[in-house]
Length: 359
Ligand code: ATP
Image (tube, rainbow, N blue to C red):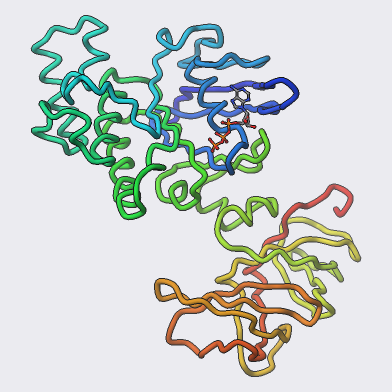
């Protein structure tokens, strides 16, 4: 999976005064599953359209298999797209929909039939050849759309929120199906979504986008465990962002003050004393005890909610900060109004938004 397949270099795109893509560069290897994850309007679809050739960038270049394809039309790039709304041809049965790309290329009928059968088997729609699109469920339509997009062996398959219109249970099932299909085909998938769970479940690498730029890239584990910015910490998983001041540092251990309580954090940065830094503490890393302990801050329980065996507890500190912690059900009962002692271990926090002048 080492070979570079797709590369974007310094892509800029404006719509009027709206600067939608701000110097985007990235590359994908053959067979990689890459997800662009970001909130609505951050530029994900625009980037996908530039890769497919439906839209031209203002400046920058797109390379596919080492060739500069920036000026090539969509049908001259070996790229296909799967859309959220399926975009099946309503008057054609499943077989004709899936075979469409092969027919355009002049593939003989018998071979078309064989390849459609293989592709339908891959997406687990054996025997669906003669069905019409309007007799299919949303999940089945999306499988047909994937089969149709993949049958020409594109170098890259672009997927624009393909599971967005489906209910939660089906979405979860199709996430693992998509991953299986991608691995069996060995095609590079570029997937866009604003659903962090979807991105975490399927991707080899995630590019987190905000306002036309990449905030961070890494494996799902890297972006979850070591967010570099408060945006990433908030967007992927549940995080508390604590404004602290560095008191001292010895090696990678920094002592920081939060509302006058001294905590320790492990950090690769050498931070000058008295500088302000933001810590991201995942909700599951913020522990709560009933007995006084150190280092911990006394806090009042404002709210508790119970979902899927997890209790989510909202706390207020004496300084008015609102923190969120999670606890497994069956542990101590977290009643509203109770006092608890909340804290975190040195490896339970990450320094984010580091600025040059603090180093
Ligand atoms: P979503 O998740 O909601 O689809 P997105 O991250 O895919 O969002 P884009 O569709 O790329 O975002 O849109 C980025 C910005 O560009 C938005 O402000 C959008 O309004 C604007 N935009 C997109 N296409 C056009 C267009 N054809 N003309 C003018 N503005 C556009």
